[in-house]
Image 1 (cartoon, rainbow, N blue to C red):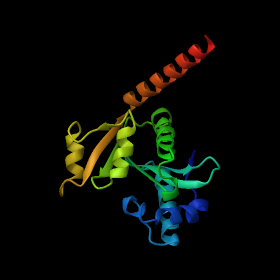
Image 2 (tube, helix red, strand yellow):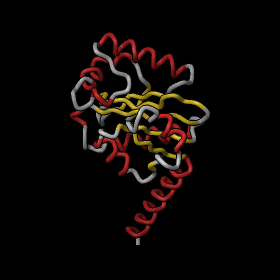
Image 3 (cartoon, rainbow, N blue to C red):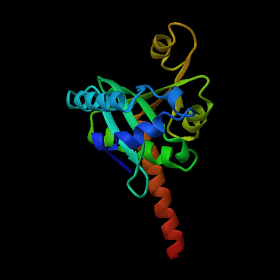
Image 4 (cartoon, rainbow, N blue to C red):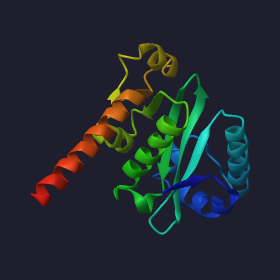
Length: 186
């Protein structure tokens, strides 16, 4: 589902990224394949320095279909950025990628809070975030971060995932599966 970024996927990812339903919402915009390759190489170097965590999202056949990133990593916090190619919208890949990435961040890396800034006009991403049970709207509860993001006007809504909430969600999901298995066996 996820793998470390590499230059081999750039051609496919660039073609997916420039789609008009995707491009306006991508944080690292590239206007040519060469520029996209340069940005990907920079991203890989930034990850080596600990400033970003970046993965390629794969479909069930290991084809690259998007990216998921934790930007501005600092003091156990960072900002999530995800994009999927338009042909993969609405097929469940976003939720699966987020869960795999958050598990890596919270259980393998020293991350405690993942923020998501979502443009007010990006209704698709807001609805996707609000469907996830461990994601919380943080416009009021993290007012300091919200105000910093929106210093020039209310452009973004702020969401966050706390490690404890994510762990509790995972524990409950595991317990529900165990209970279902027990009912099937009875």
